[in-house]
Length: 286
Image (cartoon, rainbow, N blue to C red; front, side):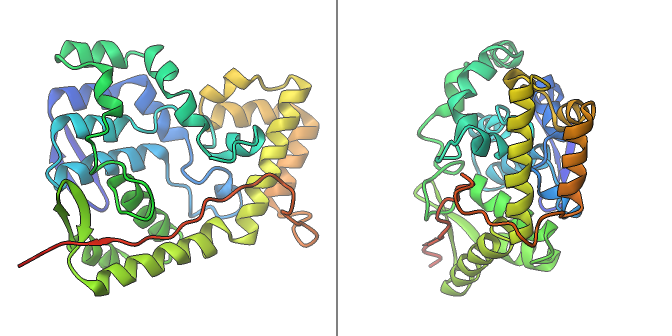
């Protein structure tokens, strides 16, 4: 199977990766927005968890990660509910990690274990601490963080494709961890990460959309229009449930039209943000 990505290019994949990509849990991510409800007010930011998952897998591959770490990269977000982190606001998950809490359960109930088993792998590879290309705590770089950063920056118009490739060309690996080759590029990505935080995640209109949409989901749950298990479906499925109720549909239109935005305050809304500071490791290129 051939796969491609706007940043990393075209790749011929092993059969196990092809089978996993074709599986229902991964295909579902095509209809889960990376930015939650941001697309309602910023239609250009409509990229999906699928694009990000493919990107993480390919970035790990490009940087020399083994097949197991590529698999883990592909599957790391399969447990995200509809509208991604919106559920964290609904359930007041301050760590923004509800998808991590349900990861093992979602995997276990899917076809993924049988696909892995077919090729001689087990689900234990999905959370292997040795996968330091894939995941590292802030303020370090890792494939997950690199991909969502450049993808969100690109789709929000804060960088262009030249910027993306200039940055990717400066990445390297040392001691199994991702770093950059110069102080200049380290400073650039740190500043862009801060800009992403301030002008994308914390953009007032985006906070409004995610906060108001989380309130809408909470009301749908309260009214019985939506069940918590329905959030295991995709965004169009949940939107269909919302639109089936005249009041919820009217509230959805208000979000799209930014009705009430001028008087909106996110204080006490439960819309929690992680500190987002990067300090990339400099790698030795001598």
